[in-house]
Length: 129
Image 1 (tube, rainbow, N blue to C red):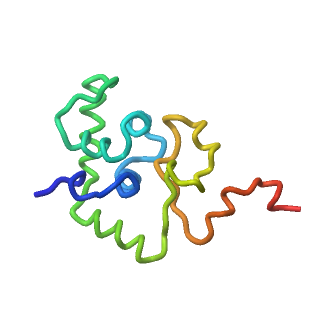
Image 2: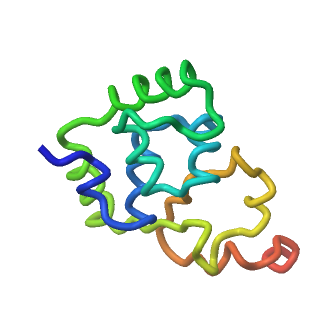
């Protein structure tokens, strides 16, 4: 059976999958994501490889916690979100709010969107009179 990392294509979908299995603001997921990207983070969750910069015990607990949340219907849930009109923003998107990068390892894995994302690029003072 193919692993989640093998079934997910690209950084965006990897981050969607991570957002569905990892708690927001999880320090280990944030650390791995910031240094290795979403595709590699998924691969590291499902492998026995060491995670550079993480203690072995932390890596094992992280893997155990996240692999328990990978369910057979996860890919269907991801597709369902798209069918219902939800979009995503990831740090590589021009609409990504640059201020989120200041959060470093604690930055959101992605932002779920619905509707116009252009408002995210407008200064708050320009939106209200």
